[in-house]
Amino acid sequence: MRKIFVTGIGTNIGKTIVSAILCEALKADYWKPVQAGNLTDTDSMRVKDLISNEKSVIHPESFLLSLPMSPHAAAAHDRVQIDLKKIQIPEAENTIIIEGAGGLMVPLNQSQLVIDLITFLNAEVILVSQNYLGNINHTLLSAQALETRKIKCLGIIFNGEKNGFSESAITDFSKLKMLGRVNFESTIDRKTISQYSMRFRGI
Image (cartoon, rainbow, N blue to C red; front, side, top):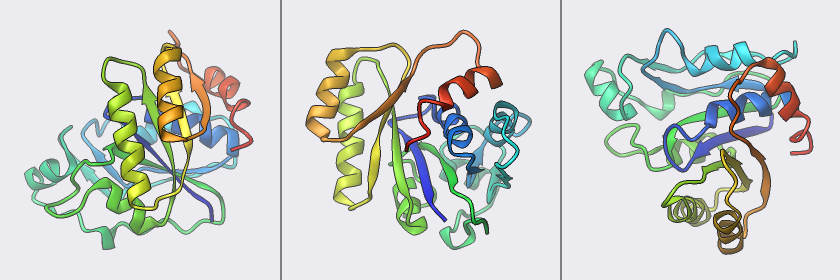
């Protein structure tokens, strides 16, 4: 089973949209190990609504936490402990897209971060970046953290408005491949996801 972990340089960067596009492009399964908040409109529900192929399977979360907070804080509020040993990858023969919570350095408990979960799952990474003031710093720090942990990064997907100066600086300094971009779209639906999926089938 090929495991691709979609992480971002922060929160609200576009990980779920990118995950849906990759699921559609690769006809891959989807799994969000930790969902914090929005339990009536989870990321799993959104991906399910956005993909149209019949092969992808949406696997249940390992932890569903009631508040939209850092997972370690949301877990403390719900009086549960996020234990990596309880985050078992679903049994599947298909490629699986795994969506993280926030960025790489988001705490899952008192001693482990999202980046530790990636190592635990032995997954490859796709890094989602978005152009805003400070995104070069945030993206390069994320890339450096992956390199330091010797985690394989397949490349970067840029989300939102294009900024050639920022993007070239990021790829030049990080030496990571630009896998593509997702532009700002006024409407995100199955048709949109299907159209973008054709650009990412070679990943």
